[in-house]
Image (cartoon, rainbow, N blue to C red; front, side):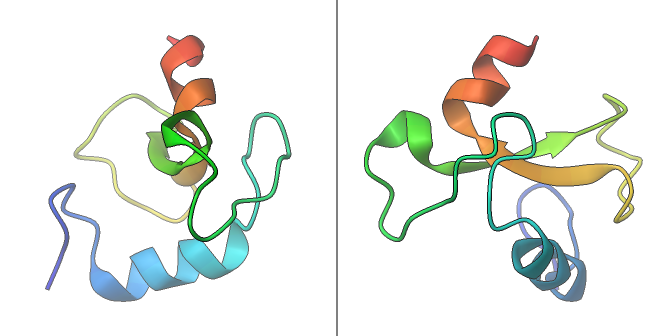
Length: 69
């Protein structure tokens, strides 16, 4: 089974264990998030949603992801 981004469940869990803080700013994720901008968001390092590997996906804060583009 996969999520709406087509990331398999096992890979999603692996990345969530690995990325406990934003890969851009280093701020740790909290549960629940402080606000929408601090929530975890999926990031494709190489901007191709079809390229789903542990090396190409990471978690970052929504605010960082929005300002990345």
